[in-house]
Image (cartoon, rainbow, N blue to C red; front, top):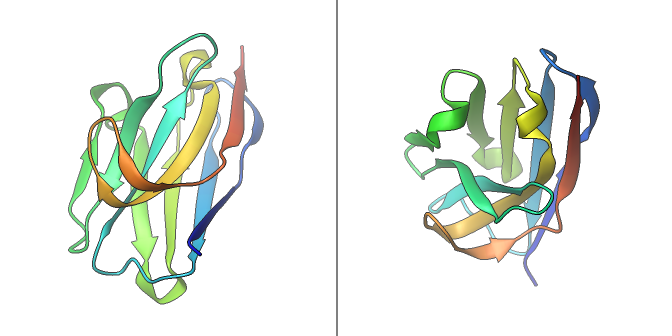
Length: 118
């Protein structure tokens, strides 16, 4: 059974940083993509970032230059370093893996809440 477990969420002031981690278990994703989606209150879920098996990365425009996605295949883990956080980054962040598209993915974590205060 595949499980994706996120950690690292919390409360941070605007301009601050957080690092999210996602540990996968049940299968290896070294040959697949891993990534992050988020859903803000009363908004639709949106794609944030993706990293493929060869470490090519893709970001939604609103986080480019502020967020960095990375992965450690030996640990079956993906990270999201978030800098210069803004109030509009407040959301539940979901780890995804497998075939990761702009609106969907094969596997999902349960999410971790990031709250950015003014």
